Image (tube, rainbow, N blue to C red; front, side, top):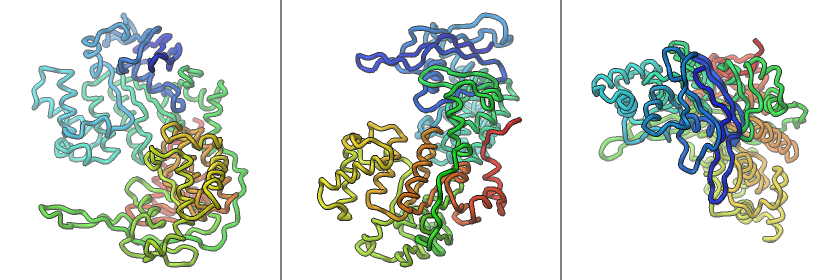
Length: 545
């Protein structure tokens, strides 16, 4: 047994209170094996990984348990094991990187922005091998970048993190973790924020490197489709405990615990499809040959050198009561199109129509009455809500701007009913954004969009960072609100499973252009374009062997 965790308990000291966040946890890991640790946010997955790596801050303690790491790496199934909980920092320094390495969820916050990616990989390598020269470490770092499929690795060695895409930064993090050839790789949600095609590439890369090196992988995720794709064994975690563990096929297709069954039932493909859809009416919102170009500037005087064609000649129509999904990879122009449609971004060319009127050239004053009818729900509700304003103010302010409600008291009552509409208690009016969970904040964002009684809402990746059960609740909420208020939605996402559940029609964007549009069943079931087929084939799904 390469890693054996027994009876682990992790406490966090918050003020005068000690909170138990990992409870009597047992897990083991063999060489060459992938164990997926799954569960929702707050279940204790990341704390478990940081406990194993001994990377938690001083407020953490381990009053009970043992983390045994096989001492003899040449014969991993025999010999004595070191208890990582008893080792000092010097001894741990010889294990981190050399024996165990970790990939964190957000590479941009893990990479130092003032050093090149090459310098950071060399630093990790020289930490494990202090006597290694810079030139030798540089050669190994470049070879490792090639191994993780970074194009032009020799040139990229001198790039800074901000010049790389999300997928490239994640590959760099993998390179840093693997450069010392560890026995165990801990990957904490490494694909959560990535497009499905990039996610598929990263998963395939980790699997290939694992097979080549007989490396054990502890993969932390809440995406059961990813679990089905890569796991040998699965451990399901809830409230700091492992409630179920077993072989992948057993856990996914014959779950023994109610919580595991609830997670599986919350997948979009398993949600009940009994919510009625209103019959689509006349065209409500749309764009015609829309173009949005952003200038690229350079030189001493910051002159315009070229343009990024974020939206390049797109025409799209959305009818009353209709949900249109807009899908594509990061950088395809989805969010730019959505923002331009509701006049949050000024278009370069083309036309924007709403309720039969060309509103493209309207002044801010002329567009005021249309602003009330067109709203936007942002991807990150925490950054879009003012942290200094309580929810009552956040909901009542747009009503006051658009003269909705007979008095301040009436607007407060309307705000309370809005919270109830999004399934939150009315006493939450007096809370502030930081006091909510991610799913609750997203509901507040929807309530704020509904405050002006709109007819059309753009939802920009509103479920991308949510747990599967919270995502399911939010999708069903949007379906019910659409039916109740006869709303039209442009639902921007890269999650094809969500598209198949929620949308009537699907539009596919690629490099600023609309490459396919039609009924969702046709686009997802029989795509006409090769790019659409690639997107759909890259979606990790649970399928019986």
